[in-house]
Length: 496
Image (cartoon, rainbow, N blue to C red):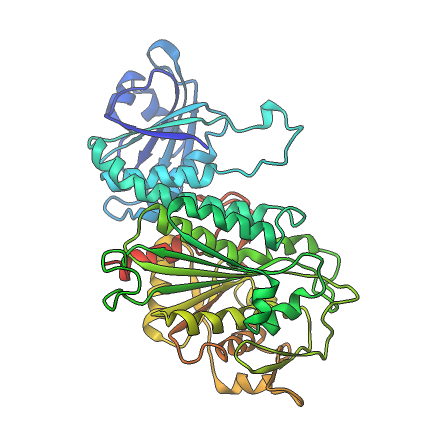
């Protein structure tokens, strides 16, 4: 990851020069003058007009001393229409073009300090790379970008704006790292221990093992885990950023916000085993839990003025002689019984127990759960939108608005009694699947049975937790979908 610095506008003495240019504007006058007008001529020849997402690279430009290796121009779109997300995406586009440059200087004409900081954040988000297990990669294949200097007239304001953005980016990086880890490394116990590292940020962390989970009556979660040699965990993370002033537990301290994540560190499907093709992707079936961990890191890292709890149910779903069988009946922490028709519909069983525990213990203002829950949501929405289900119109709109602002988009899906009827069991209170029609909806209907009337939203991120292609702010791989979205939700509506 490159280091970022902010400085007053000055021509660079070495490295690459990035010009962020709005539509119809001329390139930075100081740079163009130093090139004898060569930059403007080159951009004109390339038909670069500054349209959003447009880019142009000029190699070895004629500059004094010949020290600038390249000029990279990136379009910002129409003047006056640039948003924070647009600035981030412009920065990310630039970072993708600078992988082999050790140092880059970024000139952003007319950008506010906040938008300059956002461009730096976008560069960081795009430059992130998971290379822990690469041992034979040649130097010529490795990215070299080590330092970025952002030019701005108000250095202090840009630095101040960048500090909380960088903390959120760190949360994104943590989530991406967790989701990218191989399952032989990141089992439930290891993921729980990585959650414990958040204590360094001031997060209180509680870890529950099999004995504690059995005592709590987590029959659904334990049923999923019983086929694996890796024992389950539940982790509860507390960030007390608002209640600290009134005192923890004080009558004036607000109820916390609650975020719950599905954490299946590997999902073979259990006895209802998945096809071999593509099963390697099931290491990211803990993407919902990974997002919750990264979100808690982001809130604590930027010292968010809010009380929040993050709960993750961590299991491995494996076939074995001890594994849960189709037709087993399990008793959930709520006391309700579930006939397990398909052991590959396991995430909702994990969430059922954790959500029930959460609403009973914390009485939160709302609960938002995240899960790579169903293939059906991918059939419905593809990989560009996640599905949102909610029993509260206000919360649903707040989440969707935050998604638009951060580029992590959601499409609201229905909840209705007619779907709920598909979960009727002949021998238990319910079964864990409702058939193929409306599969993502019946999964949400199942989870809603454990919400107990609390304000709640369910985000099915199966299609968005991992990407097979690059995006401006997201390199191919783990996306950390939901971290920036939910941090924006908190910042916009729930901080004191």
